[in-house]
Length: 93
Image 1 (spheres, rainbow, N blue to C red):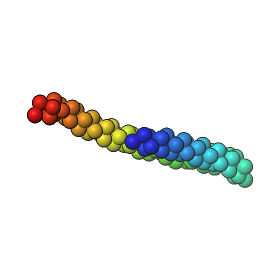
Image 2: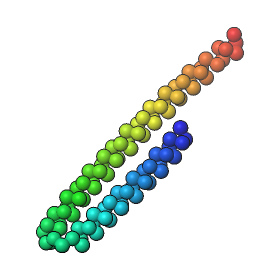
Image 3: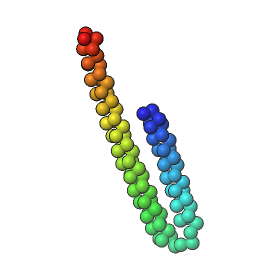
Image 4: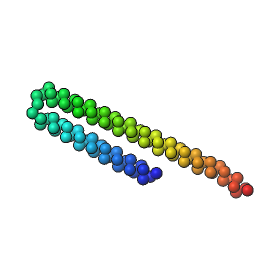
């Protein structure tokens, strides 16, 4: 389980790095493009919206992953609790 958490942290950092690189590349590409100002601003807004949507989707995926981990931990805790409750019965038998 610990390895999954470490992997999730690393994948989150990698994803954030890609998002930052994408944003920087998009900004530089549109700023140095030979388009008119209005068209360039439209491109920046469009790419910004795409980046925001991508980030929102990543957050939603992260939330789902955390909920799955929570459910697994809850199940494991219930199993351990049940075993602990049955333990005195095994000793007395």
